[in-house]
Image (cartoon, rainbow, N blue to C red; front, side):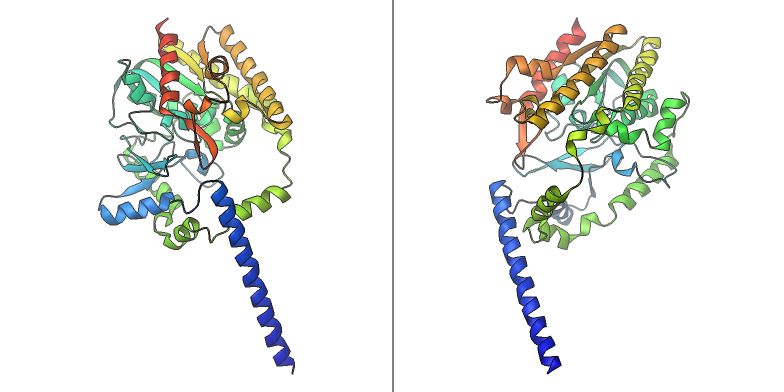
Length: 388
């Protein structure tokens, strides 16, 4: 009798569990439909598809920030795979964007020792998520400038400074442009200052990891391979993601509802140490470039449209905090006679929330990086800045 009851209860439990999953899956489908991302392909889908058709290896894009919490690393890679075909991202049409990395692992079609301008920054400088003909390298060519990009997605100011110190000796350049992204640079820096390898670049002017060394390049590849592990072969995970069986959006919704994180605090925007390190990084850039008689410029990327045109109290508060931080940086630049351009201010004067989509694109119903026109418009303004 007891066995029969247990069996019956187990059947009821399984049926209820199935019904719960079924209704959650329907909700998952509904959420993805509203976000216009129903059955969209993933990066792994295109990676596996390409691997089957092409014998040459293709790699996922890498950001150094992904390894900042790995305390056991003897070396911290500052770029992705060298001389390889990289799957950068999926664009607004859910189509893959690839690039061929140079010998140092950056998004440059070829290694170019002689340059008019060296570009330092994050994903905007790396060219997320546009074809190479549309990114900053491609746009500057239209104005007859030869550039090399040392941009990597997810880089904050300290990673950018480390990248500059590590690779600057391999390039000759007349001007250097450091791109600052107010949306996330202060948060990124609050994490970067806790990494023992990165902070050495700032504390010790002679510190280098010597990442261009052949042995270090091999070690970097091993580190990246270990990080990505079998991501390129996880067919089941890819299948579950494409068809939404993993209930990812439901999970995100639950996490947002029950998360104890108070977004309104923005602790990293109220951390004086972050400010001090940020200012110190700019001074280090300026001191070295002035000594080498190289022109130094700062470009402030625009904040994304949801911050540019705040619609609620929280976003207005966030925008105000960013404005205070940017104004402090501008004071430092003025004191040191460093020229700069603020794309946020330009867009506020020349665009509105009804036509900002000409400058910023949306991917998966969220504001993302610049459109081709956005990159071109900013580049043309930079050219005016450096030509004066």
